[in-house]
Amino acid sequence: MSEMVLEAIKFFRSYGVKCDDDDKWVQEWLNSDPSRKVSKEAFCEEDLYDFNEWCRWKGSVYEKGIDDQTKIERLLEEINELKSEIIVLRKQNNELEARLRMNTF
Image (cartoon, rainbow, N blue to C red):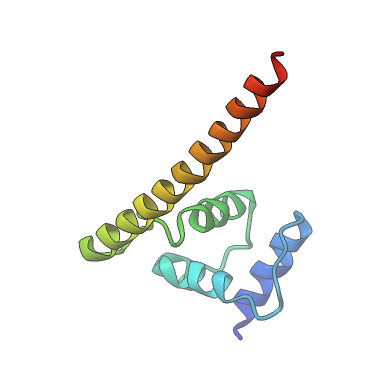
């Protein structure tokens, strides 16, 4: 593990971000922007916000640098998850409506 990764982890931890000593996401984040690798500047709050945003979109359809096929696959997966959630919510709604009808007398 590079010294830069360890410095980033130490900096993020100082702000309360939970990072393991071998955090692969920090390494990926550093590799995602070549200008970070050559920068000799110390990490700052802007880096913390950038890392947070990068983590937020990692694995989603909005992740930078993914191809269209991957975006489509992720969108289809999200659609299927939402359809499943709708089924569960409709079932819960029906159960609550049935209870409400029973309690009106």
